[in-house]
Picture 1 (cartoon, rainbow, N blue to C red):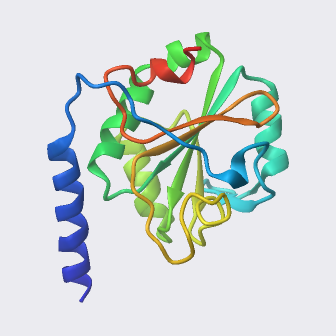
Picture 2: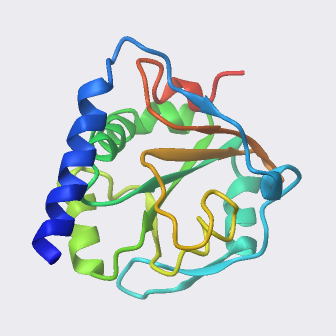
Length: 182
């Protein structure tokens, strides 16, 4: 059963990747109504040695120091996520120059070692990584309904006051510049 689920997920990822052409712009998506004014309260954990709590208040502190903050949703099995996160890592200095903070949000995976190995392999250790195994940042934000799966990649861009500005689906040729563009 686990193998079947893995094969299905792999096929879905590959079929999506096959439709992607890097010469397209990143796809903007409508924000859910629950995110129209601000982010709802949440509590998850940082994936780190200390496994510290990460709440809306923690995110607000990060956002105040930046012009924009990107919540970049990913999973270790998602091929397009790997490409997008690598491009973020390659553009780390450009992100800093444009005052964009990045928080990587792992969805649904309980094995923190697997997640951190993936982050290291993709050269993204400079970014904060949080885990969302219980869907606080997907169902709680209205990105999916209860028990639905989120399509990846997905990014929510916030301003200094953690007000959502826009949401992105597929990452195109303008990734990651789209994160700081007006």
